[in-house]
Image 1 (cartoon, rainbow, N blue to C red):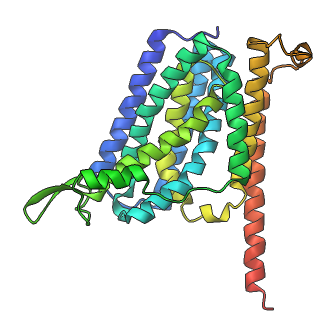
Image 2 (cartoon, rainbow, N blue to C red):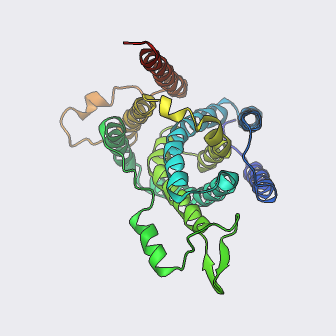
Image 3 (cartoon, rainbow, N blue to C red):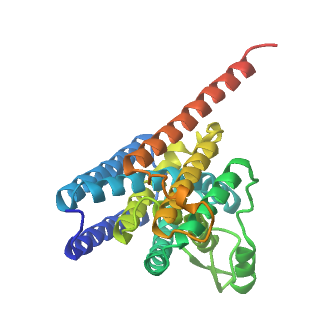
Length: 328
């Protein structure tokens, strides 16, 4: 047990692609602003689907792939919440009508999944031939964790790339429903929706530069890495609408994410010490005595870090609201 058959992996990926396609078609055919009840229902469905998939993995491959998928999915889901802050900013700066934001998010997510698949494939090949890359991954995640906790974020949703696209491609000033092509004064032009699709996709790929190395610290199985990403991104669209008004209350969320990235960075460095020892460094043998981090410890740390960050944020927000209400 522990190994997954190629046939199972192919069938699972086909089923997930069909679900994604059906979700996209549903959004395109019925563009609307989802209610809180609808969002909660879809999130519950996707979370339940991920848990069912973990159970299937347990019976097909045993506890190892099942626990690795669960940890990877929870890691990606936690890190993807950070995406929502930028998604809200992008929607606001491009002035996307609320009715069509679902479609914009869905297309952006599919673009991101394709790009992430390429990232995962490249990462797997690199790891297979150069296991020392875990040192690079680990150090990069430690740097990212520090930047997440103490660095300044760039709030410019329309990047230089998008400004270049505007110069090269004729883009209309107004939206034409959910269309990406329209006619203005007899001239065919792209609508701003195209720029939104591209920006969302590029933004999520940039976030993947953090999350993909992080999940390779949980599992080296490309199938588990990719499926964890699929399930994490599946519910992101509904989570955007469900938590959209609450994100500004989660003031300490970035500290929880920083803690998770830092933890995975250390885990990767410990793994690198065992897999690619640097014997020429004096005293390196002492470092090799540090035990590798079990998967259950990683899972527990992710849950605790996100839980503490969210609870602390909500307590702080409530305290601040109380101070504003209380007359001086």
